[in-house]
Length: 234
Image 1: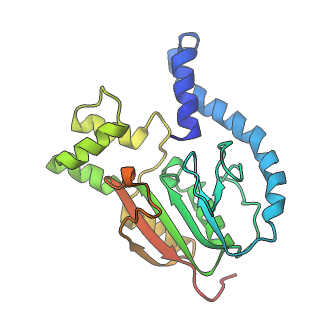
Image 2 (image 1 turned 90 degrees about the vertical axis):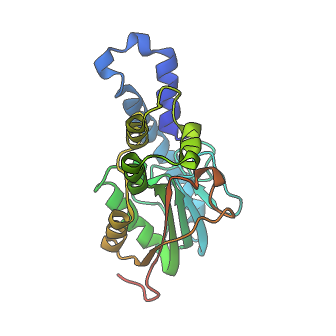
């Protein structure tokens, strides 16, 4: 669960009675932005020890899913490096051999700051390095709405959706909106377009790998891998 989602749940459970109905959806967003503004400068200081690091494995938007052997980066206090990833990364050019993100990119507005974020990924990735992205599969969700959900898909979605969501249209709305936490949904065509615009090549769908991907997210997710050219691009 993302930090913004936890903030939203906290506000909904404790202070919703004191917030006018029209302002309730924006209160978690405002509180999150204040938190990000205050937290980021401390992350910049902590990032100094990584300035000379090379061949790093970056796990961006890690949340509570901390991966040993990786530099886990997120605004969450549990991360190794707690920064606002919508800003310029406090890391050197070509410092990472692989960048991984799972259900993070959809939390960024598109085209900005999603494009700026992806350009930063390209900058810090070494030539020949790998970018691995996992996002909710928007195409699959819409296809399921038209053709009907499979029992497997329905069982997995119930793990993430509130109890009141029982119709296919409710599933679509919860997945696309997630209490204003989701900002943009991708299909492969759109994600490939974004990657290409930032300089990535060899952009292809990939199979989920339980050695790195959370098994609970396999159903309903889109897995894409890309590379940075072996010859560094300015």
